[in-house]
Picture 1 (tube, one colour):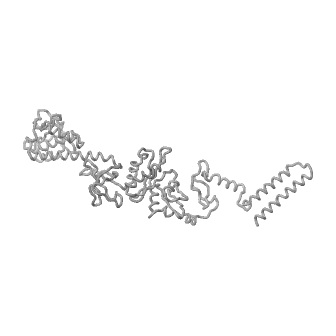
Picture 2 (cartoon, rainbow, N blue to C red; picture 1 turned 180 degrees about the vertical axis):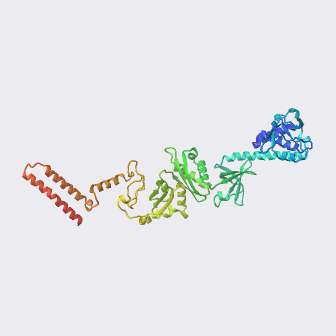
Length: 486
């Protein structure tokens, strides 16, 4: 009989993964509880099982008083008595106080002369009630060990995707079996709207939360979280699973539309093409698992204006004006793309804002031009710190970042520099600045006068010729002015 118990403990250890030492300790506690229900039981005793032979022995204290060094208090109160508890009670009030003290006994500090060892056979020494108590204690300890193992297994897998079998679906909760006796729940709030499952159907979901309840760990699953998108792409796209392509952000409205931003960590790898796959095979598998949910794959960009423009796809963006301090962007789109940029009930704009983390204001080109202030001098426009000083036709400053060490961006540097130089040369925006012919004639006049002063007077004819030429230049300029006025 004793050997059969050891073999049963070893079988439970293999099947349920529970430590054999924990099972034997639980069995000792169960036998001790059964022993205390026998008439000949003493207050202080312990049960010991031989780990190899499987024999049982009961060590009971038969002395008059426990030594103080053998008492180990679990919760020591402030006013605890220093005297050792009596070995047997006589029904007095002091005995009731002693029963409330929670303590263990260090049997190595008890003299061997005060310990009586009795070999027992549970089937012979314990009655039916005692055996039933031992059985209940053993089963309870086995259940506690299973719950602890299950909790430790799943608490470290929060966010991972698992496969399960649908057991039932009722009262707003779907019960999913995960295997090895573990069950999880999928609330309707964490599912895809309108999704229904048949009994026995296989589903994929991510572990959202693991709670340690009185009846064991409660595992909560989710199919509507953003983490579900990440895990599905890691499963279907090898580049994402290997870390060559990183999903930088996800914005999702379950069952309707999702946007993901991807970036490549290796040169030569197209992040969008890797996620789409040959002829869209990879993204099609993700869409199929999500019951037809649309997915927009967007390349990640560190520049906010470009990233916001891409996030609003499939709409075309004409211009993006960003405010770095307020993290707000004004997006100008063509008139025929306004509805597409906003999306049905604002869905496209809402997902783009969640993906980028910026507040987005979408306007049509005609509306923006109608409300834009009239253009003025460049000095009247407000230019942000570190921004390009170029002024657009609408009178707004260029939203691009200025090149380091310069006040203009790479697109407007040469053009703005030419306009700036021309204004400095003229000194003011007068009518003469609009007539390049006047300026050339004036320069010719000045050069002729310099030649007149510098040339040596070799002959009177030469001097007369130069003076005639000098006088002719203003006449030509006046004719040019007259023609321009006409």
